[in-house]
Image 1: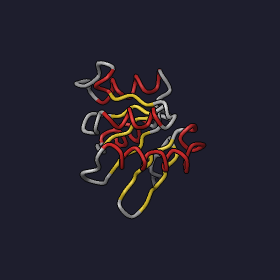
Image 2 (image 1 turned 180 degrees about the vertical axis):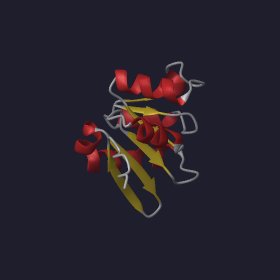
Image 3 (image 1 turned 90 degrees about the horizontal axis):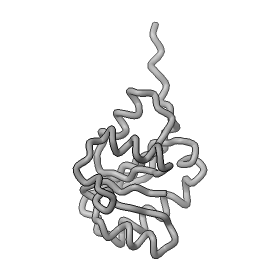
Image 4 (image 1 turned 60 degrees about the vertical axis):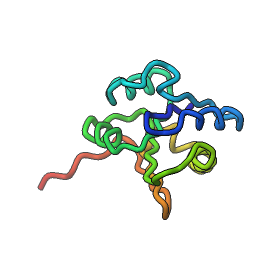
Amino acid sequence: MLLLHQGLPRSTSLYLRQKGIEAVHTGEIGLASADDARILDYARLYEKIVVTLHADFHRILAISRATRPSVIRIRIEGLRAEPLAELLLNVVDQSRDDLEQGTLVTVTPVGVRFRRLPIAAPIKS
């Protein structure tokens, strides 16, 4: 279910699997140096939710008006594997239905924001 992007601890996927969540790190499947578009294509094809530190995924999905895949962006610095896994367990539990529908999620130290895909184009006057 979760595809963890470079920059996140690889061992997070192990913690998640131990908790019953399907998770894989890009480094475990030969996508360590893949560009963002390839990672999004993989996630879409295999019905994964991308977990990343980078805003690029949100930007690409917003510009393309794509409806999938869902992306969880973590905006909390320095999380180690186990606390990150616990955070992701909470986010997934809290937003499972939204994530299945196609959603951009942003996790900050003060809360979680959800934005359903596709992102609407601005209204022209």
